[in-house]
Length: 290
Image 1 (cartoon, rainbow, N blue to C red):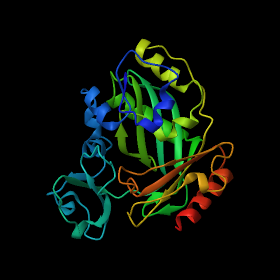
Image 2 (image 1 turned 120 degrees about the vertical axis):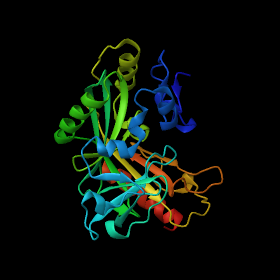
Image 3 (image 1 turned 135 degrees about the horizontal axis):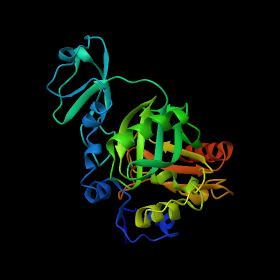
């Protein structure tokens, strides 16, 4: 199968077109298949490429001009198995130097995610997703998919042209305000449901033939996450939750092989409209006792 790294429960999304080329869908597969551009997974280099004040553990923030009370963001330099695991805020003067991490000047602003279809370093199509205003343990409870973000488009068009020449396919960027904090040589597979019927065929034609067939703007929708703080195994019978299966709403459990929440998330709710998705999320919370 030319799509590499597709999880079993998401295979249905990739049935509309089969590429001749090998395309990475997970970060591990994308890193392996794109040796010329895999450096983007190095978040320290990504920060430095935008002129941010940043350095690996072992370099004191004071040596680069930060005062001891100033906040910094500490993260793993590269982590394909859970990109944000270990990320935290610290003070420049009291930061622990953990091997394999780097620090960066602290950023504030809207958190967003953008998928781009790119041909030889030129962005041809955008799908913007914005984090909602409700968070649990540093994670958004919901994402709004298919919004307009022209400021992001200006930032990403310039960055891709400067750094991804020779790359054709899909890539994803996570931003805080107007600054890129993570880059991926794959798309946000969790949002593909809301990109419209022509998206996959346009992506495959771009990679296989270099031909651009505009899929149009993404129709959009909402993705809600049900989190659990306990980390214990979950027994959640979706069929017994009222409203699950109603028109326009899908629910998928997000559990590992032992029934525990994957990265703390129990379930994902996808909905075309906010009210429908929120209603099902609250019913799931009630069934879980969360």
